[in-house]
Length: 118
Image 1 (cartoon, rainbow, N blue to C red):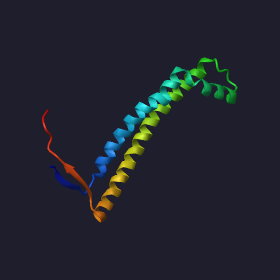
Image 2: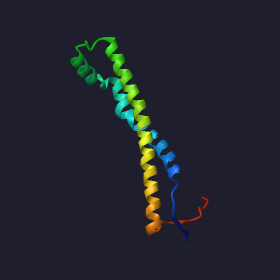
Image 3: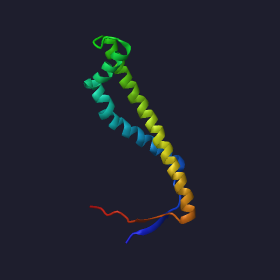
Image 4: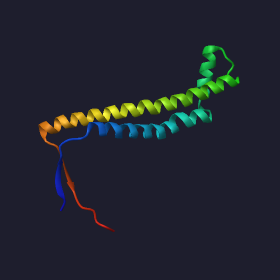
């Protein structure tokens, strides 16, 4: 039988750090498949067509392709940074709210057991 413990408090700054790293890693992986790879492998063609229609620039020009490539890479990097910060802030807010609720209603009860060697 394990030892029952109660989680009374979660570190807000610790949650912020973990949230930032987790959010950045998640966006880096998911954004790679959703934004970066399709854009680099030709999925940005619709964007080039819409851009050329708006500006009147021939979509076959080298400048339009380089511009779209630059936009996609910048959007990916900015997305990683923004999602990282936002995830960190949300996790810090959750930790703060958990600490308030845990003081009023009691903490989360967990049961720990010493690990066995296999």
